[in-house]
Amino acid sequence: MSSMSSMSSMPTGPTSTPTVIGVPAPQEDIDAIVAFVAGVQHAQRNALTDAFLDGFREDAIWTTAHGKRLTGLPEISAFTRKVLPPQANSPVTATYTVDLILFVRPDIAAVKIRQRPATRDGGRFLDEIFHGREDPSELMAAHPEAVPGTPTYFLAKDDGVWRIAAAQNTQVIDAETLTAG
Image (tube, rainbow, N blue to C red; front, side, top):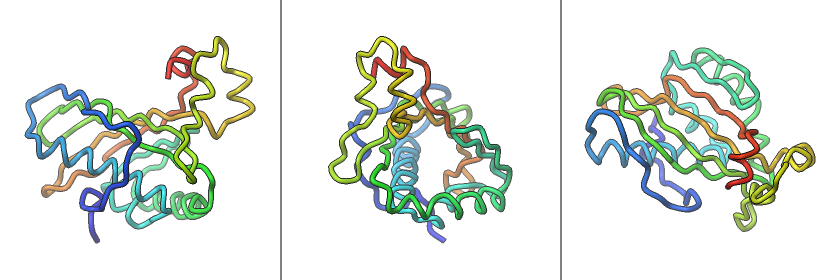
């Protein structure tokens, strides 16, 4: 099974260099983590269930954007095999940009990601409808597909490969954050 860090990456929207804090880490690990997140994007955009699941440790914990806790690869796998395949035909996909990497130790990193919903047929960012609005609550209710995410991945490097040990995929509902873009 190949790891997501070795998959070809798709553009992640606006490219930027992530902020890196914590203990010193080699550039190759920063690059590997950015490539890992690009692999997550690629697997999700293309409904590549096995490639997506390859990015998890056996003992991983995953919390979905709606608060469902999944513990261990068998439970994460069952959920993913149910929800990911239908996404292949969705007109909405998402981009993933690494904003921040905190190296807790050289082999442990907390990764903050900006996840933006976008159209599949041109990549128009759907969350732009919220920018500059004073109160986006009605728009959020009318366009839930446009609400962005702010996942945090807690990655562990085992045998030279970065994998998710724990992750929280949170929707952005804070009005100030949502409207600022």
